[in-house]
Image (cartoon, rainbow, N blue to C red):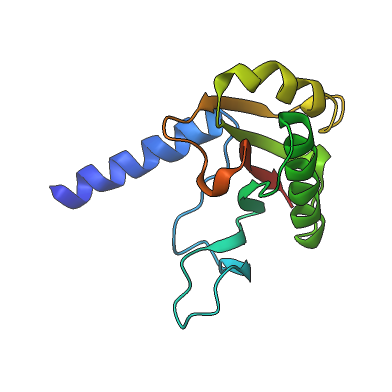
Length: 150
């Protein structure tokens, strides 16, 4: 009975994924291994990876700006860092599908947007922007992470 239910749920999930244009493969069908690169720590077991590729996507970890400057300088720096990571992974700013923006102060939203606008081509990715209570780690005024197609 449990197996039958699982099979039905699996078929439903695959059907819904197809309807919404999402790729879906079972574990048995997935031959590609997760590619991890740009590990950020020289410990035996690192804390996290700077970027990971899997299933035709690249996931870029949060990038910040850890120097004195205003929101525009920090945003410009962070976007350049994302672009470097994307190129290293075989992708580009134009292939980004999702960006998360973390602002140290939500009042910097307009200044960040002035620099951000147009950096991802004519069809920008979806984006979530939040003001972080307690601040962005490392005293950066902004941090961004993203997901892109390889």
